[in-house]
Length: 183
Image (cartoon, rainbow, N blue to C red):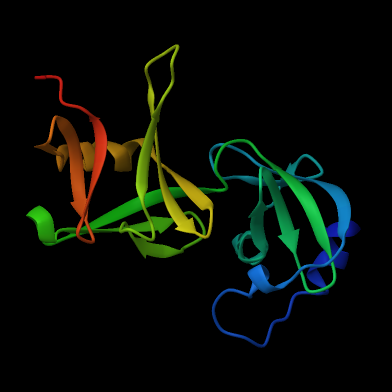
């Protein structure tokens, strides 16, 4: 990888644990770079898939959403990228407990793990034309993961009815998935 992406990588602090504090960084916007995250979670640079998982994970750690724009941020530089749908994909789910005490722990395609709860809500959008559901879960501040189809099927199997809605419990919160067809 050469050019603008390498320049951006040079400014990422590396001596810390966890995610960088991108919410504290407010550098000047330097324009857009030819980077895109496809609907399936594949990251592309100049039209070529980024094959190194460690590189994808590094970029994912400096990703932020400002309004409707997705940007990669370092302390000295901010560049825009294209995201086709959601920047992450929830590829696995672990179920802990049951009923109202149930917790759903998701794993993303970049190995982030998080529990669906008030801070990490689940939501489902229904396509008005096809009626196909698109489920999402918040990974971190206004960044979401699209829930992979096989994980969504497992989620639906856990659904219970409450107040006319099919939904799931996690982290003490009921998340509606769809209206109860019996209503």
